[in-house]
Amino acid sequence: MSADDCIFCKIAAGELPSQPVDSDERTVAFMDINPWTRGHALVIPRQHSKNLYEIEPADLDATMRAAQRLAKRMRDSLDCDGVNLLNSCEAAAWQTVFHFHVHVIPRFDDDPLRLPGAPRDPEEGELAEVAAELRA
Ligand code: 5GP
Ligand code: ZN
Image (cartoon, rainbow, N blue to C red; front, side, top):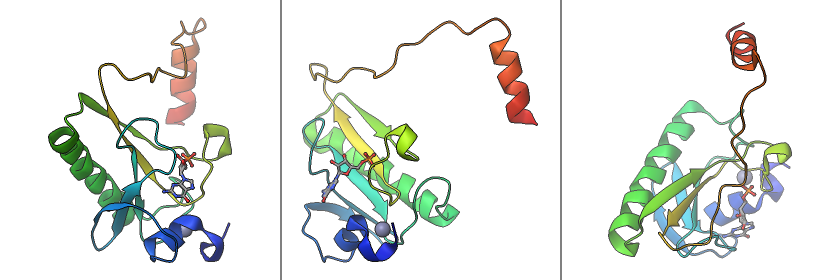
């Protein structure tokens, strides 16, 4: 997907409607159209990049700072009990919109969200083996 047919580029440019909640020179934050909890928002860089692999460091910094700002606002304005940040990189990791974004999801003690995966015991030697692969 190019920047030309990217829905988040169009939202950032004001060419598609959204419910904005914050913006600065590099970023825009707006409500997710299908919220997981009340207040679920997305923070994006104004400049198109596909995902975590490709985003410019300055845009990544600005997006994470904006996510922190929004998380604190959720704590103070929505009285949430916690916040999840979520980023998905590539389809295998559930990315569906290919313009980098961070989900900022306010959490409430009684909300219905549950972890999508179950922690497991590693195979024999797995941790040392994979750590060596990552260090190489
Ligand atoms: P992903 O699955 O890529 O991590 O997240 C994409 C998110 O974008 C989803 O949570 C989805 O609900 C949201 N989304 C998709 N299309 C639109 C749209 O047109 N407007 C807004 N505000 N959110 C959208
Ligand atoms: Zn885009």
